[in-house]
Length: 396
Image 1 (cartoon, rainbow, N blue to C red):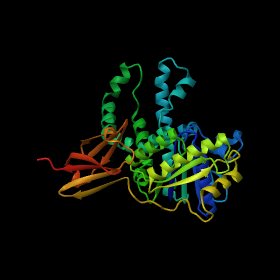
Image 2 (cartoon, rainbow, N blue to C red):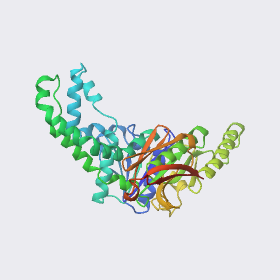
Image 3 (cartoon, one colour):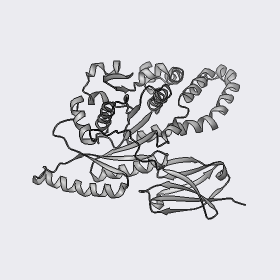
């Protein structure tokens, strides 16, 4: 199963591009699901579905046309399906602070619940071979990064915190429940967490395999949006995902030659030239500004016909270059990471256990080292063109 992840700054049109891609895949004969991972869903709007039917019908895969389903993750329904034990305990604690039942239930929806639920569905569909392709319409860039970092974050928690936390609470629970104002969570609470973690088992390897997962960044030819697209490229690469396409959406067409629109078009052409240079060898696809709002199957198919050639398969694997690799050179071992838009002063790194921790701005990535490199220490780091090279050696 191929996974195509569409991300970008809010408002650039990634939902329309993701929906059009789903239609193109379905037209190619691939059984396809377009899933919205954005808490502010607009996928059903993009297909011009009846708004009164959204919550009832799109929480599970909804058939749109031959070979094509869509799904919008409904957090309220997911709490009932997967998060009942956890949400119930948090709600009971919040009630003791004076919140009403409704307020407590709303506050008990923790950040990450929706993204984790979506990831469980992706893993489920992959294991059951339900679809040939899943197109993920992700939230704006920052939330997308939270989505892809969930497996690593949970893995760290389950290895380092979960076992100790479960043992300690099991020991102190009888006494604490007698004297404390709030009962500590039962062991079934921890069992629920473990079950949820098991449901996403292996998804991190799936996301980092370029033969299975590709990231497509949707942007507009505007300076501010381009800067965020560059940062998103670095962050996705840092998390081990392969970006294989940039989609420049809403490009003013050649016929926009009037004084006002002509100035916009000239500015866009300059930025598009920068994009081609920045992201080379990754292709930058151009989608023109349409004369109408792109909503409904017919208009989305028009977008697909501009975005793809008639016989083109959007799920085709076009780039297998991994964001980071391990190598050996002149007696030292190296970790090589693609970071075309990161400056030297923005990058920090240190070793923690058998992991190399790399920081770019406020983002931190733990890169698990092979056994042969686990005991080594970083001794030098440098940029070679667009690649960060970290040298590791044995420390005597």
